[in-house]
Length: 403
Image (cartoon, rainbow, N blue to C red; front, top):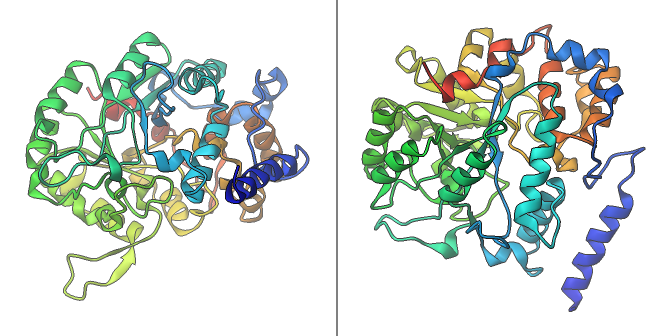
């Protein structure tokens, strides 16, 4: 072990030692077996009232691993090397959040997710995300610029093995020469959507290279779940300007349904539709698109990650107040991020008046056992100026499985 490795190992051990059940947790304690007294707490039951469990689909659940099984998962070596400190520590946090066994990461990730899902006090489903490689404009795969790869076949197979708990979402890079064919193939295998992360995966949603993909998405009536705004959690191609919400107009104009992950609630983007080319908040540009009548029924916002400490503020407040938008908003968790302990601050949410002291106490206890349940309850309890997310926000199945 060299000096750099020793320093990083010391940091990791110190983080574990500093984790305390009586103070802010830095690492997920990975407790199992949600106590009945927490599940049946009156505050919890009040938060669940009004949910239609048959429509409660969590449409943003990552399926990660190391490829130590027959999954076909591939990781960029940077995520497993001490030398690349940021990527290495991020991935370690993700594995801890998922309570993954280092000797059998792929299988233990799924086992933990199944256990969390089965603990829910109602029948619901999570949608597992595949994740494609980065491709260049010639249609060539660029593994060195890819963050990781979770194959469509693995996501589809995992969902089919647990049909009561899982559905799946494909990931198809639009620059692939077989992009359109891959959409039809995913549709045949019952994919519920296609996932993009443009800044990390290196696709420009405004490029004509996406047209064949959009045509296939429209023909299959599959929604595109696409990250917009700044990307911090996943490295790769690092094309932050591709996260500009205005670049999604091309998809919308071609009739593709688009779900904007996190409602573009982080970072700034250039107003490419203005002569001034001003730098505006990405959420402001998302709002511009949402205000356009022609996009009703096509454009949706997804509220995962909005309760993270770095996103609290204007975007969350606006979305809570815009009751007229709630039929176009979808709940999702972005699991395993709700179990990355430093990303959330219940104390800050209490101080800002989003939740009460009593709610914060219950949520903090539940989070140590079940991050999925914690994420759902937190969003059900949120209040701003007396407004909450309406029940329809939690009926996500209506978009992934339209009539």
